[in-house]
Length: 82
Image (cartoon, rainbow, N blue to C red; front, top):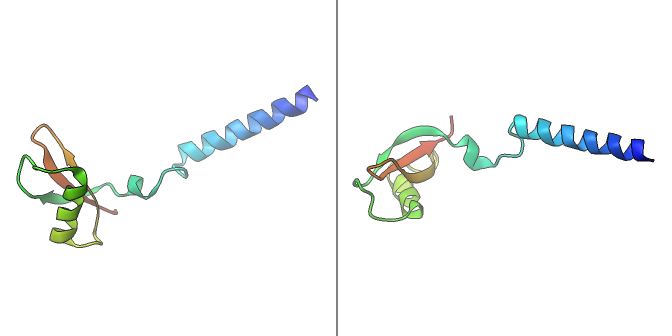
């Protein structure tokens, strides 16, 4: 009985590691990583949700799939799918 439980545990662990290493478990946000451009003033005066709205207004959706405030100067950076 103990041998069967060990085999199942190792099999499940192997499947989880395989899924994690091949990025199967990552969501849509993870694939949206190609830089599209900047939007708005620097420093960007609002939150990341407003940054995404600025990206959609400037570039459209698609191609804009994410907007986040980054860098020491707090620019709003827009990203698209590769």
